[in-house]
Image (cartoon, rainbow, N blue to C red; front, side, top):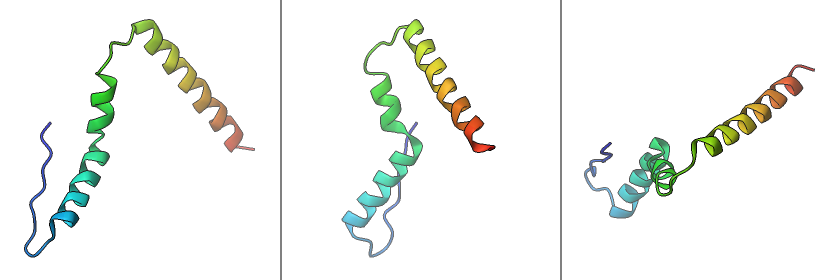
Length: 65
């Protein structure tokens, strides 16, 4: 997954770097990289997913009152 930007005419390096950082952040490249740094057991992944699903369901149930 290669992410790049083209520096526009008369654009400062700081501005281009800011655009690049924003693009990388939106593509979630760093999050995927950090997630892959350490091995996570499948049971831990399932536990986290269940926890997130519970939180999401709880939020959804509060929304309709």
